[in-house]
Image (cartoon, rainbow, N blue to C red; front, side, top):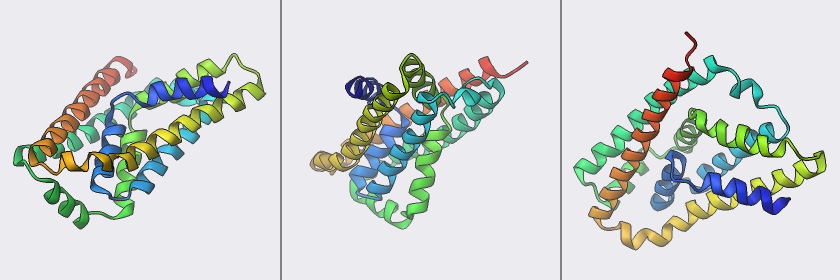
Length: 207
């Protein structure tokens, strides 16, 4: 059951998304990697626990709350995507990015951005609360505990590996062109998620 939880959780978490793109960039900049990865992991602990033990229905079943959350998330990700796009247009180098990050590199700012990217996306509740919780709903209590442990093991392993493993790509990202491509990719991912959230809000906002 631990393996089942790890496989399902890993499959959901490893998909390219705003959260993973953010962790990757922090890892490349070597800025607050531990705190960013830990924040992602703690969010998964809370959300997956809610899903597995049936406490997440309040959020997932409230269309009004989900729509409001989606609107806020779409606005935030649109702004973050714009920042990445402008950075790509300027074709800033890795050293430029390091210097900019150092000037605005408070831990609180990094954690706040991580929380926003994670919790303002209703899809994270779909993955952690609805999907993971739905699968766990057919299990006994002991099986749920094992399932949750496996899911959280995959989560913690992934985020810390992504954050600290990003440094292996540093030789590649010291080229301005590669860093520019990453910023374009991050902008595209953020804007795509923002678009999906906007569509989700329109479909679910109570009339």
